[in-house]
Each structure stands twice: as C-alpha cells, then as structure tokens.
Length: 105
Image (cartoon, rainbow, N blue to C red):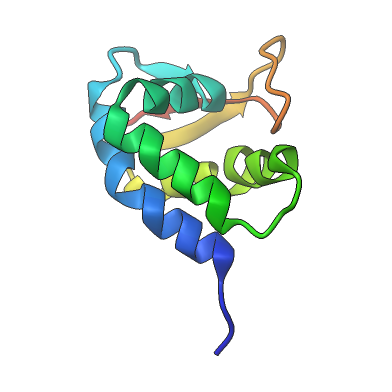
C-alpha cells in the first residue's frame, strides 16, 4: 500500500477541527475564517504547519491550496457539525474557492 500524504495531513489536523468549530462564536464562517481561527490555537497552528510539511509539494502555495481547498473542507464536512452553505462571493482566499459553512443546530 502506498503513502497517502493527503490522508496523513488530514489525520494531523482532524483531532483539532471539532474543538475549533465549537469555539467559533458565529453561526456561519468561511473556510478562510476557520483557518484563521486555527492559527489562534497554538496546538492547532503547529498541526497546520506540520500538515503543510506532509504534503509533497515543493511550492508552499500549492500545499496551502490542497489544505484550504480539499483537506479542511473534507474535515469540516466529516464532523457533522457544519454544512456547506454556499460560495463566499467577495471573500478573498488566495488558496481555495471561498466557501461559507453553517453550524448545524
């Protein structure tokens, strides 16, 4: 069986995602806002930086695109705590398509 860097990066971040969602004090947020919230928590920030190193891209920008555009949205969906709420038009994210996420009640 081959090495799965995206899976390894996701596994590095997964333990932190639910706690960040529960601490966010708004009902809707963008992927980029979620990533910014991740950076406020030292352990989650370290996990994010570690996940960047796991992705086998020589360009950090491309690694960030994979995290912002694929891995973090997948992790958000997997929690069952939020749902995709649409494209976040007017919200800049240089690494992914801006999206809104809504907390489920």
